[in-house]
Length: 254
Image 1 (cartoon, helix red, strand yellow):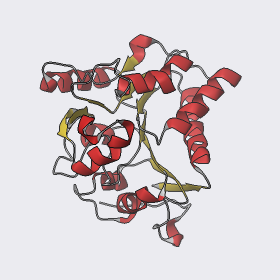
Image 2 (cartoon, one colour):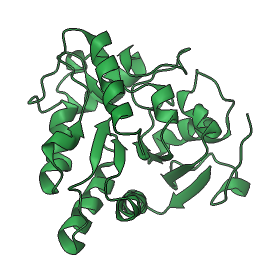
Image 3 (cartoon, helix red, strand yellow):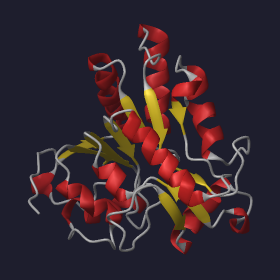
């Protein structure tokens, strides 16, 4: 695990975008796992800028998003389908058939999870997975529980997550209570992982992910056992990390 601490949110996004761009330059047909929410927006903005200025080519790239709210149509402005189009996909030359996001309107969520996993497997798995982190240390919508072995599945959102997401809605009562999410097992099978966090409100979650015990109560802690993780955080999100591990490579053994 490598820790990169940046001076600002914008720099965090730039550092992450550089890794993603490098992955695409090295492997034009890369399979990317993507995240939504406010955290990765600066990364997407930087990638769009690189595409427009120096021609970063997304035409052979395939993407799989982490999650989607259940019961929310793709054209709803609060859906993650809509988010990805607005912030990223419509600004680059990615092929629509290469974009994959879980179907929150599927009638059978178990079958939808199985379908999504088969699509990922058919592409040979995810080369680079981008993650944010919730205040309770969730990744994707994998809330604290006992499901480290889960693949794409239905989750009931914790009240803390609902409250955090309510800033995107007019009222907290409008926030969906359920989502379909790529599971921890699927995330851990990615070749490379980037974990992004910014703001003091994420400092405790970052500490748990990097320094805490590996436990389902802090889902992101499982990343300590992954072979290739880069944690990119701003100074506020890194506030609780011990000085001796900042900016160095950390090796964790089971």
